[in-house]
Structures are given as structure tokens and as C-alpha cells.
Length: 399
Image (cartoon, rainbow, N blue to C red; front, top):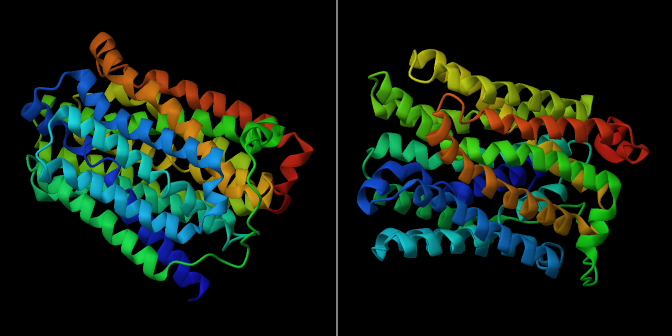
């Protein structure tokens, strides 16, 4: 199989596998009515996935699984298991407690999909790695948006259909990966097992700064992906607009990031990773400060702003992952990426839980403003990284 076809297949399977991530979050209003959920219960439907992902990714990093197990098989099995865990919620008639446990398992299995997919992408790309990882993050973005698409066009109240459809997509992605996916020519030799790899990577200053930039990005991203669709539904109701269009806008807010990831990846391979990541964080941080001011106002203006935010909020993501893959030892790329994502997703638990609390205290007008702290910290880390000699290993010396 040619490189182009392999990258297209990898993007497709990543999109399908990640479609279960927000499958429960997309139908929070329906589940709230069915299960009588409070704000904390609503948050746990997403936080449980994040916790599961963190547990799975940290375990994988400590055991060096992403570098020692054949990546396409790890990717395929993980995607199928994530789909199976999601399917159990509607099929078994799970209540809230069982659903949270199954969402935890879903996140744990997805730790074998997202970072492992980036590791596979790194085996196929070198000078074009920013674009390659951007393609993969774009696929992840579309997959994350898929449940909102299913909700918008499959019925606002049909939460069972959304979960079943998302689960089927993830299983299909796993089957395709098992049958067709292969690693590329830049695959490194399998390293020996080393408990201390995670600590060594963290003590590497360029890698640490790239990770700090990623943490600033993650402070904002998943809280926005989780709560902006809910915010849009509330705003559309307040302005007397059809909630179905709010679901479509929520899908568009997440999905448009796919284009942002591709564009930013292409530019970063030529202009440098730190510059592109900093610019994206500046735009997304400004949007998080401004979006609440349009609550309940003209839906057209609100959708326009969230589309700009959705484009920028994930545009920098691939550049942090590409940077770590270039800065870390080649034989430890999988572990470095898994460690980065595990700690980044751990941080998202804070902001996902805080947004509904701030909404109650400050209303939707200011609930997202504190997310701008993350982009500000990320820009600082990128500017520090840019000044280090080791940053020349990124983007063929373009930093």
C-alpha cells in the first residue's frame, strides 16, 4: 500500500475509533432527563472517559506498550474494545453508575487508539510530519464531532441510537485497521523495557516545554468541546431558535477544527511549530474570553464566533505532538506521545468540572473566560522552547 493510501486509511480508522469519545456527552440533555442528572453527573459522563484515558495511557507509558507491541494490532483491538464498551450502555440498559464505569473503560481503551495512531503516523512521515499529525488530529476532531452529527440528524432525543451508531463506527475502524494498517519505513527498532523512560523524558528540557505548551492547550480544548455544544443549546433556546440547529452548530464547532489542524500542520512544516502553535493559542484564548458576551443574542453571530474558536482551539494540537516526536529519542516516540497525552488529559478533568460550576456562579456570560489561562501559559512555553538550541530538531530546523 502506498504512503498516501496508508495515511488516508490511518485518518479514517482514527476518525471512526474516536467517534465514541463524546457519544454520551452529545446526548447529555436526554440523559439528564432520563436519569435525573445534576450538573456533577453531567460532567462525569465526560470526566469518566478522561480518567479512563489517563489510566490507560499512564499504564501504557510505564510498560512501554506503544513502543513494544505491534502498533496496528494495538490500535485495532483498542478501537474494537472501546466500541464494545460504548455499545453496552444502551444494549444492557445501564443506568448512570454503570454508564460511568463503561465510559471509564471506553477511555482506557482509547489510550490505545489516539497516541498509538500518532506513533504510526510518525513511522510514515519526516519532513511533512506536522501535516501528517495534523491530518490525524483532524481525523480525531471529526470523530469527536460525529456524535453531535448523529444527534442532529438522528433525532435530538434518540440517545440510544447515538451510542449504538458511535459504537458501530469504532468497531468498524478496528476491523479496517486490523486488516489493512501497517507501520512505515521510519519505524524504529523495538527498545528494551525501561521503567525509567517516563522520568528521563520529563527531565529533557525541550520535551518538557513542548509538553507544557500541550498542557496549556488541553486546559482549554476538552472543556470547550464538552460544554460549548451545551452552551449553544442553552443560547438557542434563550433566543427562541430551534435546538436541532444548536446540535448542528455543536457538530460544526468541533468538526471545523479538522480543517484548522490540516492548515496549521502544513504551515508549521514551513514556518515552524512554535510560531504556529502560539498564533493559534492567541486566537482561541481571545475567543474563550469573548464567546459568553454573545449568549442569547443573534445565533448567526454566535455560530460565526464559535466556528473561529473551533478552528483555532485544536489547530495547535498536532504541533505539540509532532514536536515531541521530533525532540524525543526515535525508539521512544510511542512512550513519549502516550506520556504527553496522559498528563494532558488528566489536566482536562479540572476544566471540564469547573465550567458548569462557573456557569452556576457567573452564568454562561463568563463561564468560559478562565479557559484563556491555558493558551497564555502555552504561548509562554512555546516562546521559551523557541530559544533553546535543541528546538532546532523540530520541523527540519524551522522551530
